[in-house]
Image (cartoon, rainbow, N blue to C red; front, side, top):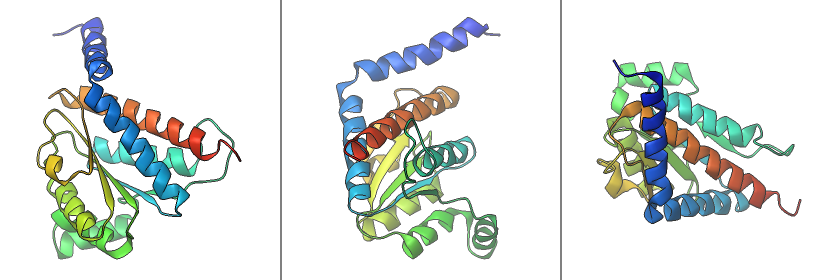
Length: 192
């Protein structure tokens, strides 16, 4: 069995690969700009994921609607899995694969941003949500693991963590999400 230091070092190693990858760093900047542009134009941010990635999606949405560093007004952000009655009804009546795409079709508007978290990049319900978002001219930001999976072709901006290990990917998703939250908050409220 690995020891504690090995787990910590693996997490540090993935973050160091991100730190050295100019493409990922550029994409983090582009994701920040896309979120900021949407919010300045009275659009909304939506998040979706499954399991631990759903928890991360909800966490990041809360950073926007609650606060990050600044005591400021709430920004319009929502995790799409927050309504358990909706989720269980649609999963039962249709399919779990369409729980997010139906919501995207129903509530998203052109210029909104949909952020999907999937460590494999292949989660069927996230892929279908991104397909629906494309039809509605919603900007898609994919948080994935190495390679991006099926989400690679559907993401306007891809944040593919250079790892195939789920815990290391999810740790990096939260780090990247926090960077985006901090940068958006600082820019949006700079002159307010």
